[in-house]
Image 1: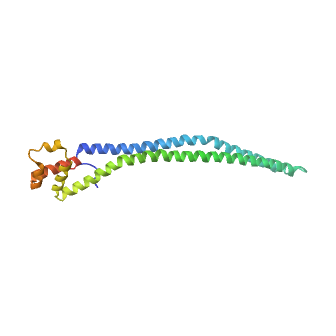
Image 2: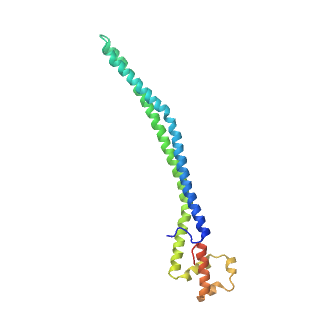
Image 3: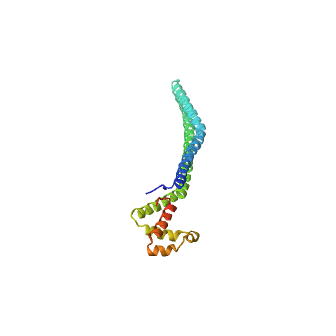
Amino acid sequence: MKWYADGAARFTRQVIADVLALGWVAFWVWFALGARDGVLAARAPGDGLVSAGNRVHDAFSDAAGSAGRVPVVGDDLAGALGKGTDAGTTLSDVGRSQIEAVETVALWLTVALIVLPVVFLLITWLPLRVRFARRAFAARRLRDTGRTDLLALHALNTMSLAQLARFDGDPVDGWRRGDPEVIATLASRRLARLGIRG
């Protein structure tokens, strides 16, 4: 495949377009990662709940252990304090749920902010580049195998009436007769239009 034109002007435009396409992708990746970091900052309350829940759980667990050593009422007191550990566990679970929700939102926001712009690029920029590459490859192959009459015929079919009127004689008649000068002129115009050296 031939991805770039031979002519300097078209080559420059293609390179600029490709650099802009890469810049587009890089910008959206950078923006998506920044947005993800911003969303992940919202998990701080969840981290606080997990930490507080763990402290509550540990405090009640230690208290229940100590209360269990008190004579007569120790077991009852330890059982009552043991229920406080459940409150700490519940608090930690709520914090973890909040953290998971924030991380899920951050993940899907990042994916959306990267995928949507890249898909937009793929349906706008990429088909143009592939179409040029296919046409340029086919035209170069015709040129290299000496089938300039086909290039000339294609030029006749794609040139505007104003361009055809600029010829001194009848280019169609010259093509039919196999006039090498007319065929070479038409073929070189078609190649130039595609950005390929004649």
